[in-house]
Length: 433
Image (cartoon, rainbow, N blue to C red; front, side, top):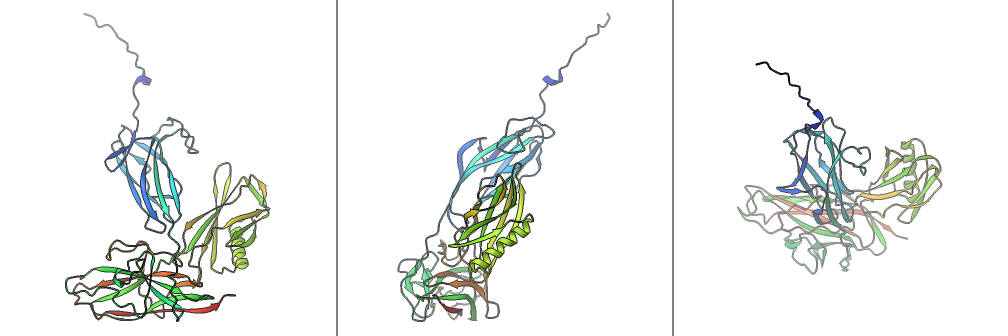
């Protein structure tokens, strides 16, 4: 029997090509692509610790996924980014946190832009410029940052012009319940006696616990300039103390978007003071002009400005990071406001301003802690002394600020009844005209 030759035409295009396919999980719960029910980062007070979420990204396809971009909404930051690629059956974590420095409800979509390695196909991601031929996986997130209440003066004025006030709100008269929150209406009449409970062997050994009190300038007509604090001495029994002040500085960002800028100047306002600064083709010189104008015109000798540019495709972004620093500037400032422009060029938009870091601690309400052993968020502790004090800043009439005290009890501590410390605050009284 003779073998008849058989020819088979094989259509390669008909064979399924290997493709990547992503799935995103919140823990063990699958987040559907395009999910509109947001992952809730919670409602938190301004200045508290930034909440974070870990999303697990799995490649359930049979080819490697190339990660092109990850986009998050305003006020969200990527802490742990995805790798450049995820192999078939591979997994990676995406960690995103919500910044708590700016008050508001922050909602939007997290979007992963990707495609199968070596492929150009996919569906339209036109909202992500430059990745129109890619695949997208997106889901909604939300979170709310609440404004802290205005720090009220308790209304009881000390004849020495500076008063110490318990925290805990209301009429709290118990030093050991001064765990942050609003100031009490009850001022400290003498020393901060019994700020901490006396501990006995085995009770607080090897532990830290915390208390908070306020310092107020009781003068009606004069500022307490460049206040500094320190610990003059300690009576150490079985424990020692450190002080903590949220010593951050106010930072704001000015963004100017334009097709082209060729000259002119901008006039802006901070806290009722108008200042004008001229354009320069060198972004560093332009930033220097802004720094000089705001310091000189508005008598703010601690302001620094860093300039940078970003190519946004059809337009260019001119970015100025403004830091309010220096003694006396440890407070939140009003947002810089646009007044007028004589800038020349093409497609120049009105400057946008946002607060990137809230100032403090002056006029700040301390966050309340749930228990005496819970560290207050955002507070660093140290032991300032007379030669190396902690600078707080200038307290205007009736202004105040919170101070945290951390007690660390030794592992082998005996009872701490004889423990104590001498707290000092110093500033120069300046009459307000």
